[in-house]
Length: 128
Image 1 (tube, rainbow, N blue to C red):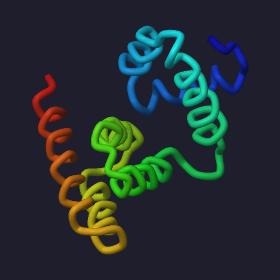
Image 2 (tube, helix red, strand yellow; image 1 turned 180 degrees about the horizontal axis):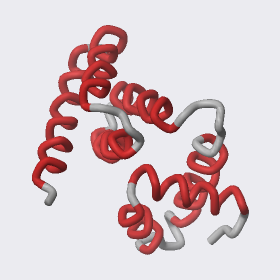
Image 3 (cartoon, rainbow, N blue to C red; image 1 turned 90 degrees about the vertical axis):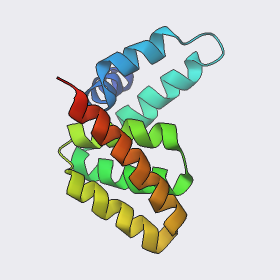
Image 4 (cartoon, rainbow, N blue to C red; image 1 turned 135 degrees about the vertical axis):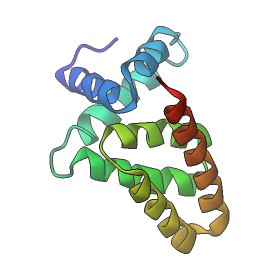
């Protein structure tokens, strides 16, 4: 496992956005096959890009929601909807992101994204 400063910063940000439990489980379950991917994602995605200060995390979350929606990656979308909520994105703002997706990337992508968001909201509403 990398001990670079960029990795440490990325790990801190990754845990703050998508949740420490999820990140720790992902790293703990990594093996020789996928450990390099965990390191790459943590260091470069979360450390090098999310660690930049020119955009606030809330804005980065909103951009991620739009891009992941368009890419049709439901598992990642669910994860990043929760992250967006942690970063202060409101449900109304999430709705508006997916409305924008409908116009510029297609209604089917937006419909799926609305469905996934509803699942996340419902799960969050049931938490004590």
